[in-house]
Length: 173
Image (cartoon, rainbow, N blue to C red):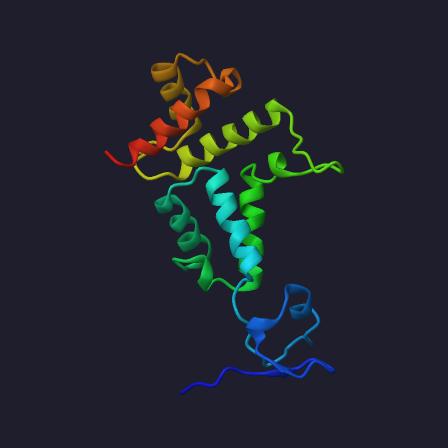
């Protein structure tokens, strides 16, 4: 049976690496032979909140994990990979509308959310299953033919759920 490594954090006794917080992991010496556990529960929660907020299908989400890290579950990622995945989700627009101000209330301009969702539309078009012609021109044609929109900049907020749904359903045909 393989025994998990334990380490001594000055004065804290012996602990398993999975019991470390992310700030404690960063304190480990470089080249340490201690094998660190995967992402923390807080990181996993943030990953799944981002998945929900970006309205990613399970298939697309697992596709991200497979393409980026060769894994099928976020639990199998390392701490660094979990952080990288969160950065990737932020590049898709997650987080901008989920920030809180000093009063604790959510603040975001409506156009900010629309811009993030337009980036998600572009991403799903270029990487989603079921899209045969993954070009910006094909996306423009799809939008004009099915939604009577002359370009991405003319998409209205009320049209976004329908566009996202249509693109996602193309993978199910």
